[in-house]
Image (cartoon, rainbow, N blue to C red; front, side, top):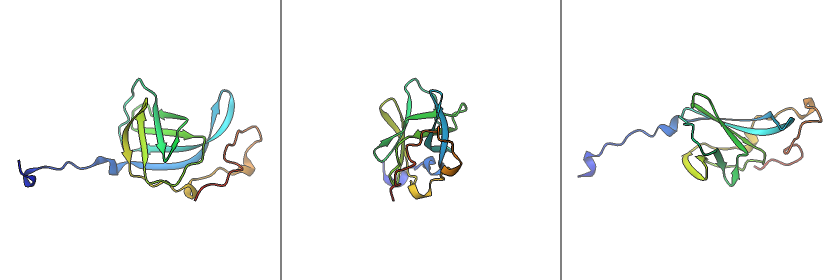
Length: 130
């Protein structure tokens, strides 16, 4: 076999899209603020082991895969570091690394003045990393 005869398939990971924003989710009957990392443009199959996302050294609290498998929503209750990659896996095994820049200052934030005091806010008094 010679190199000039090899065929390179396109890397479909370049089609993956990222959305970062703060959201409120119910946890055991109490509203909590999370940073949601939504990935689309990839097929995330349902599997028995729990899915997870990793950004830098921060692991998601939970990941919810869309019913059709075409999107994944990672919920983080710790500040995200600046990073160049989002990793997704199941159980304890990373399946995919997506080259997607994470810029904490660009996360769409909730307006704290409009939120009720009952909401658990792990980010409200923390300076966000650069």
